[in-house]
Length: 287
Image 1: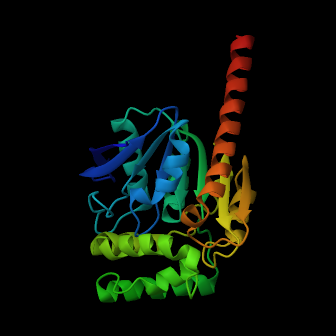
Image 2: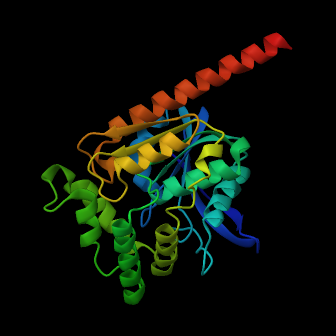
């Protein structure tokens, strides 16, 4: 059974205090999983079950989601990175492998660029990067609609983007999981985070070249808004990185193809761990 807890966090230049709801499972090298917009930490349950026998798996509700405190009224991406730092400090984790989905991908990169000494590797999944004018206009329109309505009135359009229309029979269950999360999300938390998500697609443009940790950019062939081209562009910019595109999958590949996603993540993490061990051994031999 996972350990669940509430830990304090401090974010932003104003050092705003709040609390974060955390789940921790397993033992081994730490892996922190960051969920996407409108979700909660339990959306990672398929990965937790596949990872916990070999890894120390940490998930938590991002700011404004689940049982975590709201972000500031006008949050910065650094606030969400500060939340990750607070969780690691509270759990006494010096460094970890980081993986994030969608909004979580943005946060994972922000954290890795800001706190490279605390990151062993980073795996952004279905991340956005330098949207085309059309995609940016679409995202802006969606944000304005959500703000005008005071939150989500219906998740149907989102579920269509994520799963298709009609939703295939084999994807009805994961779609219903997402529907429940979207309909229960805190309206203010969702709106504030969504606006940030829309405005930060270029946040890492010109910065990925300085990424100091190994990176695996993973996305889906049929994700129309976190496209394969975006992940390939990020991988081309980051020094020690690669890109994997899962065939036929859409945005929520963590739920619709959990075994494949987790297999790639484990393979990458183990490769990084082995490389680090060899480098440590060589350094000790020289000294």
